[in-house]
Length: 316
Image (cartoon, rainbow, N blue to C red; front, side):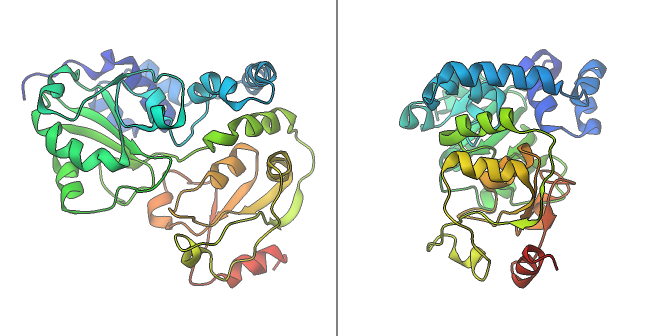
């Protein structure tokens, strides 16, 4: 495979370590500097952060597409990988009319591997991960950091080829939305994040939110029921359908919010609740989501016992 350049030279790789908390032992082994390790634990200046969000949101009016150039570089959304990584494989930018990504497109062919720098971060949309594993990974000259995800189905499922990818030393670390493995040294979850289409509404609610009293008990929001998610939401209480601003204002004043799995276990509502100061109550598999993505930020319950969520709503 040849001698790899120090990964510390990749700024995007360093940003990725900062934002998704690469384990310190692994970060040291991969050449992340001591200064960068300290940056990982630096607290945000909330006043400065909100001032920037307020200015960008105000300038956007009610047009979310005008807000996207700012939002997609400052908020984690389901398409965040396009704006974090050095290279990308996917079609969502064109399909959704998103702003140009930070990195360059990577074609699914053996020759493309030569253009991938050592320890570069590569985002691969979920539907293309198997093809990427077959056509690009075998020809990489040095390890990379892989990030996978997708705004819509499908998600990456555990299979023989994902097992092979986990064992391949050319994958230095794999961050995956909707993780399907736990306890793997070079694999971790990546947050689904705030809904791309309503991130402007979320930002405005973030600016409006304060430190006032919160509603006691478990608050309910509307959750759709259809063939792709009905089994994960069966027996759970439901709330009213609200306009976007009212939905986010509810999250900003709630203590706890029910956030069941949808067509996948990770869901916008969970991160929107956390971002607005509420604790989501989730039925995602605890082994996959804590520790890691939701550690210390969510309450888990078993889908086999939906009555526990109902009891919490009633204050039991």
